[in-house]
Image 1 (cartoon, rainbow, N blue to C red):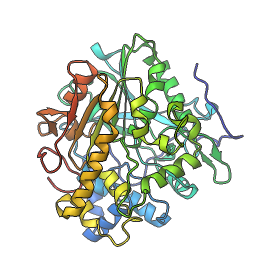
Image 2: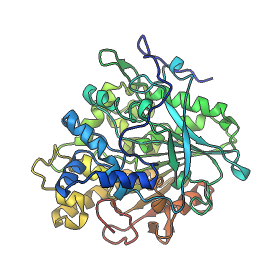
Image 3: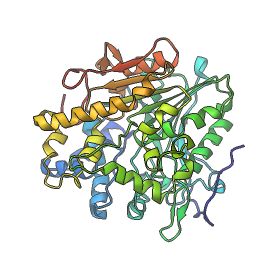
Amino acid sequence: MIVSRVRGKEVLAVNSAPGKRKGGFLGEPAPEREAKSKRMELNPRLVVLVWCLCFAFGFALCRSEVGLEDLREGEGLFSYLESDAVSPSASQPLMVGLTLIEGAAAKGAVCLDGTLPGYHLHNGSGSGANSWVVHLEGGGWCNTVRNCVYRKTTRRGSSKFMEKEVAFTGILSNKAEENPDFFNWNTVRIRYCDGASFNGAGQDEAAQLYFRGQQIWLAAIDELMSKGMKNADQALLSGCSAGGLASILHCDEFANFFPKTTKVKCLSDAGMFLDAVDVSGGRALRNMFNGVVTLQDVKENLPSTCTSHLDPTSCFFPQNLVANIKTPMFLLNAAYDVWQVHESLAPRSADPNGTWTDCKMNHARCNSSQIQFLQDFRNQMLKAINTFSRSDQNGLFINSCFAHCQSERQDTWFASDSPLIRNKGVAESVGDWFFDRATVKAIDCAYPCDKTCHNLDSTR
């Protein structure tokens, strides 16, 4: 039995009937996305401005100093920007319905607004009937009461606004030609509605905010165990962006839910967020993470192997965690992660004059000093994973692309023109590692050597 810790005195009444989110979202049928794009006639300057305000691949965080009107505008434009950033499945993707965790509220496991958390589950078959991929959704963080209150009005903070069904592509695809190693597994996408990478605790009664990420995680796992995951022969915990960070934070905990006879591993996609110096000499992401950790009382859920000698904010950074994870883990990351370039290295607060705007929008427009800054960032990432990479049980795929979240997108996961390192793509590399077919330590040469990238900051 999983025991959830409930902090505070009450939980808001739960609305168990999710409404459809206004605006576009991943998983929407292509005709609907195209229709919305046509309705949204945007001039290029506005697109650039919004991109800088809220990076759009569906996994953005909105900065605290941005006004609420700007936040709403950025949310409404996600569908427009996603039409360029997201490549559809080669065929009609599997659409999987949303299931709310009915018993979650009793365990204190609720979204920011007090509504029930949810997940999407597609049952496995044949040889994959007792195998599970559990994928943690990403979507940035909220580091202030103001941002978290806004987040309650979106699918990232309330199940009222979650899509009723989403597309399963990439690592969640049920087609052998799109996902050769995991296509017939039980596949799960756990929705992200807490704003702290499934790690928060407590609440803010005055703002009616519920920081219950840890409880949501436990309630979701408990639910999946009751759905048959307790009988798993093998299981893979994966996640993208903020979900990729969550897969690192929860990896060993996930493994401990299973008997030793179960093969358990973890995959973090675009979750290697670095405590890096930004273009102004400050640390924009550290400031953000400090707000998240403090506001949502994340400290109690962080690994004691880290908090015993480092401050809680440092222990929210993967570079201080991955070397101590006991469960086999695979790090999939772009060396020039687009989200980190936009929101950690050169956010608007660090670049008020827009010196980096052209470079962020298209790396071909970066000057030599900007390219060197990005190369230094890549070097910092490689240094951060040095100890981790020495373990035979761990795997790596660090390509020199301007990308973010490559396991969810069909074109980057497994397609005829997918990104390669030494003639091997992402899906094959992850599969070889999981099934112990080969040791995978794939680190790309530095930009601009890789011609197979699917870059999100410019047209290929």
